[in-house]
Length: 156
Length: 153
Image 1 (spheres, rainbow over the protein chains, first blue to last red):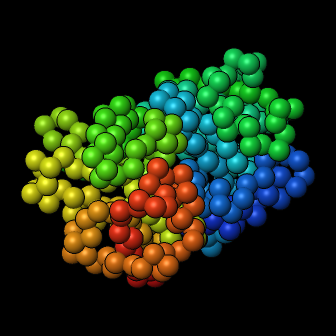
Image 2: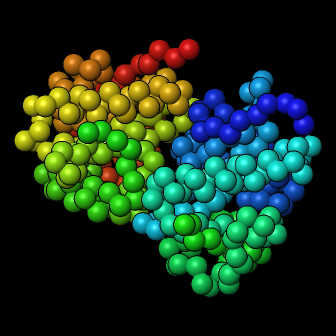
């Protein structure tokens, strides 16, 4: 690919495109749906990958949960752009973000465990995750029958 | 020095916020709230100590709210409250917010920075969502609602 693209922090003007991308995958059961309210109120969690025309190619969020723990959420790359390492770019930006904020442990609940493992995460039993995270799970439409895989990574 | 908050600042921020919450200056905040909204916060450091903090939280496509803004009184004359507020308003502007709101007991301070006192029914309903959990809601609310319109490209 010769086109230019960049990962940057999201602004409010990105919110609707994020909402549509995330929910298009949610509709296929590949990730959790997000309301507009969730996207707006957590817009600072998001990074976006955009092309030179500012079209959204992908997005991802890093949500701070506790003093040493952050969660990767809503990581998505537009279907026709998959397989080009764009997801890696987004995840790398989110991990840098965690380092900047001073958070040593990052986890995710995902259906794409191979992707995360290839980025240095390891699969763990969900019961090993701190109880703190279940506070947010309680509002999930899949709770308590979560079929996602937990992956975790300790940052350097 | 003004800077974005980091995870290791939270203990000091909580002490500060909840000390002033005890004096009814701001709402009390839980450890969970501060961590989950850490990105909203700035801290003010003096002599290696955190003497102030504040946050701006995006609520919807066009609005944000200044929350938990406190500066220790002995530093109040240094213009730190003004600097902190301008920092938060500027962040809101960069995110693309059109209106910034604040509930405060210090309307004169915010008026000097361009905020306008709002009648409570001028306040968007969206902002009341958080009021409902407030210990002062609805009968003993003693805060003044204020808004600032931002010019956005």
